[in-house]
Amino acid sequence: MRFKLKRLAKKRPQRVHIKIQNGKFEIIGMGAWYSYWRDPYHLLLTIPWTGFLLIVWVSYILINIIFALAYWLGGDCIANARPGSFLDLFFFSVQTLASIGYGAMYPKTLYANIIVTIEAMTGIVGIALMTGLAFARFSRPSARVIFSRVAVITPYNGVPTLMFRTANQRRNLILEAQMRVYLMRDEITAEGEFIRRLHDLKLLRNQTPSFTLSWLALHPIDESSPLYGMSAESLVQTNTNIVISVSGIDETVAQVVHARHQYIARDILWNNRFVDIFHHTSDGHRYIDYKYFHDVEPL
Image 1: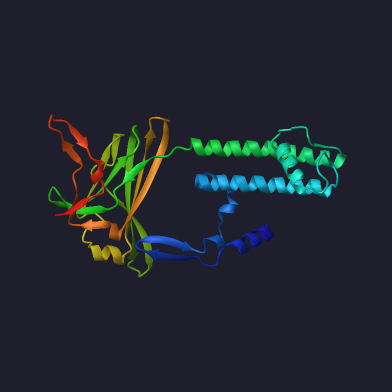
Image 2: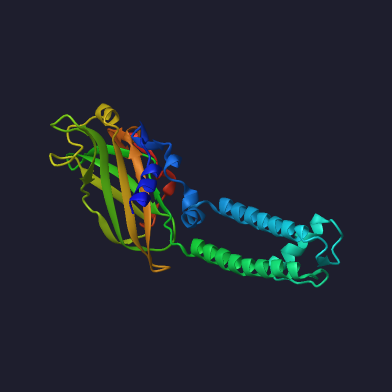
């Protein structure tokens, strides 16, 4: 047990560098102690589809090259394959791995039959893995929630209020939607120690039974607010950023979906307000014009 603990301790990093720029954290040298390749399942679920398909394609080519080399080491072991033709062995591997079996080329030695058996099992396992991964990527619930590019601080009922907008881009409902807002900033404790502290920002309304159109989040900056007494300059000096988390149940798939966004200090505009996106038609109806969703105007 002691030996195992020592080996694990050697793998731990001695120092992790953190770079803070505009309120955003960047961990430098994370590859020294963690790599996506140590968690391939998470990697294949989170990378874009282009990267996923590229990995699948490269892996497929490499596997066929490896088995083609194995057949090549067996000499003249594949019937009807041109002697010394690596290309014929490669395409025979493709047919075997995919269980195609044209019959034009077939194994004629015990060695070749053993390699074919191994490759057939590899093909079955590979197809099952790729099918499972593709299904997991397709079935993973996701939310198409858009947030305003900036947040504003403007008076609301006589109280300075932090505001930002969010909207559901899908034509369905997010049921029992909840929003949590956090403020993170650098602080110095009474003992003179530096900490990165997390504060909750209370909203006038942090949940809605159905989130379908637009949602204007309001946080009053009163004496109980962590933003009370702060200015645009102090937000920058303390590397302040605001993190928003929205969750709810997608009525289409009946699964919980999440959306996340953050605003850094320069994304918070003081003494500005959002341009109204609700308009009235001549016959008394109302409509929303998302063209002005991100627009603000000074007071």
